[in-house]
Image (cartoon, rainbow, N blue to C red; front, top):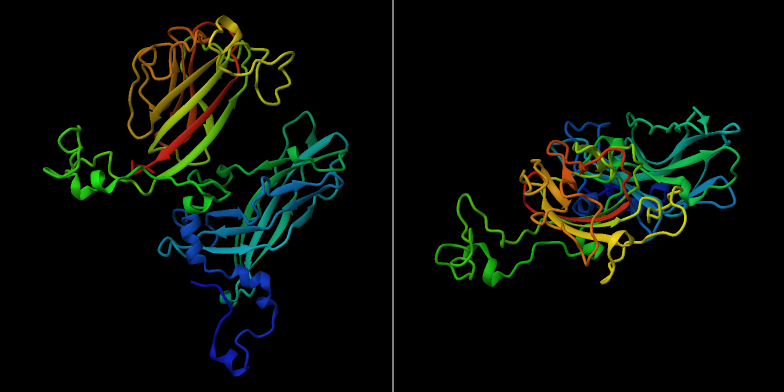
Length: 448
């Protein structure tokens, strides 16, 4: 449904299809883009039991910038780049009825009065999406940027209080989209870029989407799909006696009522990439990378921005050998010379860094071989046991893990959240920092 200005008999009678009015300025005409087409770009599904006020929301920057919210080095102000904000359909029966609005220029948002001396809090920058004329939705939408302030302040030594997003309203219909958190500190007359925090998607109670929407692969420049060659992998060729070379030579290479060969193209593949920086862990932590007395610890969340079930994974892990001269980012406990994770052909002992690669999947619960005897959805496993992918020494560099130890990344089968899995022998042994890069390909394994 297009959101443009109405083209009715009344407008023809006045002699002007687009009568002069505020709803016909450039900003509102752009905001009246065909949201049904945009649905195919961002795929913003309505939540379960969607209503006028129960919607899924998201936003997309209209400027190719590294940061959409910028701090001001001369004032207590943030600058919000032009943005398009969305709300999903208000009904599960018409899932494509998405609505969006845009801003045309950079919006300046002042933080207001500073907290009392020695106090701080966290404010919230948001976008408000509304109709130009609630009685005539076809006239388009208007998007404004606002600030939700947190009234309660706490001492610098305490955990901050976060501002809440205003509630969506049914009459007149108005929807709020969180953009970023901003630290509001006493005694500071500027807003540093480090003071701007991304909104966790779970703030909206929805693990399946990032708040910041990404374009589909064709727009992002990433061609994400399973490789396909029609002569070999077309379904009609993967039949008994078919011409594909896989039919007579591969296991499960024939299409049946219960088997779909893995060589069949999956055009609905989604690709995700994350980095994890696990800090060096103190000796008494008994989690992370420190010793756990041989007990499995699997409750540390690594990522809950989406549902990670139904994916194939490739993961790289760099493990520092030292617990002090580490390479963790912005870690004040790291003093002196840093040990960076680089492979060397002639290094050995505790002066190098172990590099590991693992593959995994999150659609079939399995028990790895060797030191790990835990049945999970394994995205990655890192261990000394030679039967586990990515384990063993690398160019003479041994892991800090003992033969019965292991680290890993698992997917919660109920929530789809990524968790860190660790089991390390000993008591009171510190652990190093690790840097992890994870890639996931979501194909047609359920749940997506």
